[in-house]
Length: 230
Image 1 (cartoon, rainbow, N blue to C red):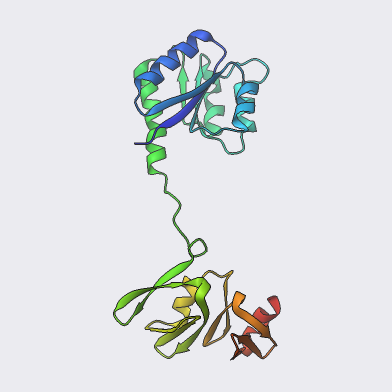
Image 2: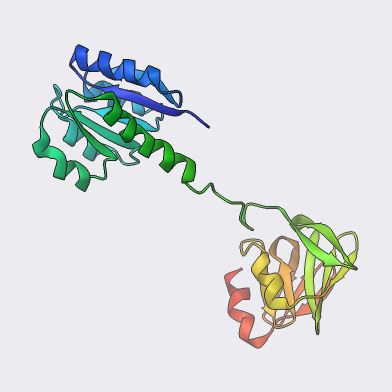
């Protein structure tokens, strides 16, 4: 399990000691730093990141709630305070939990477990077509890796498509619409019902045709606006 990194923003030394001791007892927590006011925490967050802030409300210079409102990309926040009347405002600001002092360890553990569960269940970003530089296609009963950078153009062949690259040609059983969805739109343009071209490989073009690697490819009447956008 990856560690939940955290900071404490608290001006009472005893409260800091209690939280520090509690954090040390929880294996998945890692204390990065403590701050006695929100200004110091703000300066630290400009060049550092954290997963969780333990935040007191009554702080010098800048109150906890005011500090919370300044955070553009806020990490998880657990309010630690002796004042229960700020609970509603805290939850309106999407805090993870609201702990009343004196804080019992069992209640503390319940709160941090929420953060841990949220972190482990957050979907990780998946690789998209725009992020990849290749695709795998079925060619003669096997998966063949084809680099986007090598594709010149793609031509529809009824139930098949023909992928023409700088090195060779591939025939795969799929529709033009299917392959179009798999290609990054910033690299490829469909210029005809039967043709998709690599924008980077276009040598020249008119309203009626595009030249790719010395080959003239017709531009469909319904696709001429795409050519204008090039």
